[in-house]
Image 1 (cartoon, rainbow, N blue to C red):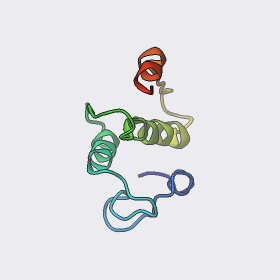
Image 2: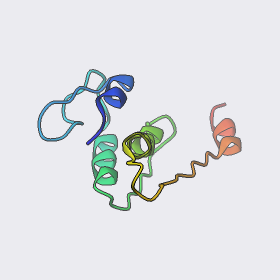
Image 3: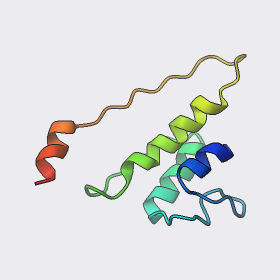
Image 4: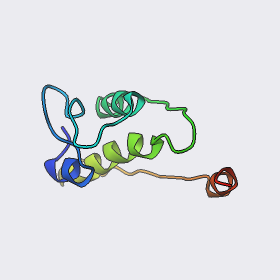
Length: 92
């Protein structure tokens, strides 16, 4: 489950069986599906246009894993890469 502190930080309300169902700020359907998939430890691929919110699709599950990690578990790690040059060229 996604910690309340992260839901609040991203403006998401917990309502119903999935924490992504009802939100203060509405997510795109691909975001909700990707977050739910990643939270179930499934390999997830998201391919959408610039500005569609792909970052939230992986950022929320990564932050959840980091925040909820138990000290007795093997440490998890994440590597986040952004294609900044391609993104900068796409913004003009």
